[in-house]
Amino acid sequence: MATFADLPDSVLLEIFSYLPVRDRIRISRVCHHWKKLVDDRWLWRHVDLTLYTMRPKVMWHLLRRYMASRLHSLRMGGYLFSGSQAPQLSPALMRALGQKCPNLKRLCLHVANLSMVPITSLPCTLRTLELHSCEISMAWLHKEQDPTVLPLLECIVLDRVPAFRDEHLQGLTRFRALRSLVLGGTYRVTETGLDMGLQELNYLQRLEVLGCTLSADSTLLAISRHLRDVRKIRLTVRGLSAPGLSVLEGMPALESLCLLGPLVTPEMPSPQEILASCLTMPKLRVLELQGLGWEGQEAERILSKGLPHCMVIVRALPKESMDWWM
Image 1 (spheres, rainbow, N blue to C red):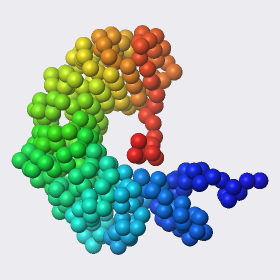
Image 2: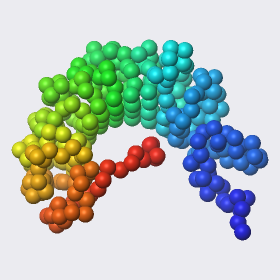
Image 3: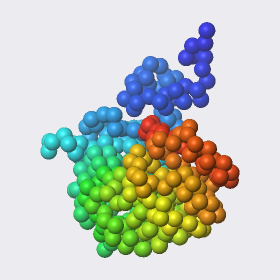
Image 4: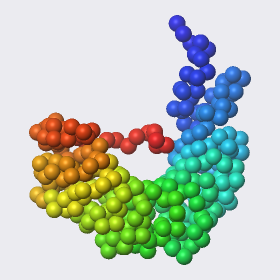
């Protein structure tokens, strides 16, 4: 019977990669060989620290001892709801990430109070920034701020960030490399603000609007007006109608369209109406319908048969992937 000692290093590293950070460090004490494996650069490319209440001292140790230049993606939790005495993410820590982790491309911050952290302290190497249930300073995304901040930023995810509003959306134009924008639960963004914001962000190639107070019809109308080169659209179907969907007809670059439930209203387009609109999109290759309750029904057959050049995906809403860096 094979034992751990018989497994090649590549397999052991793959197994170790599924372990939480704390357990990785613990197994490094088993033997010299495992200690060497835990030190392998490959194992520290993607690090998730949201599982722990992390003291600043421990975080600094991980940064110096294990992560440094190896790190590509980092997921961190804050302590927004833990009281004023809880440790908070500091500007010094953010600056240290930039200095010690020159290969850091993706930073995901969860439930963090960033109101005292200036955006200028974030690592300038970031290509993706995700903020989930975070508090940010009102000055973070103002248009008047230094346009040289985060010069490589291509994607920003704003999920349940209560301070985010219309003027911040227009302020995203300071990120010259930005191509992907995800808005989730940003209830302060208005229909007028979205229209004005997209007018200035007309170079976006991917837009997701999920769980917001905006209607799907108004969102699609703003997209059709200003994002003629958009390649991927993903949005919830709240307030979606057949006339609203029809404004996308003829979109020249659209490759992927994803409509998410579960709220289905009487105005919701029928499968035949969705098919008619999709047939006018010359580059559409993926149509995804999630959480609409159509999986395995006649609607799925109609769309699959009518769009032979497309990958048609009809399914329930998936669980959140643990592979958060993908």
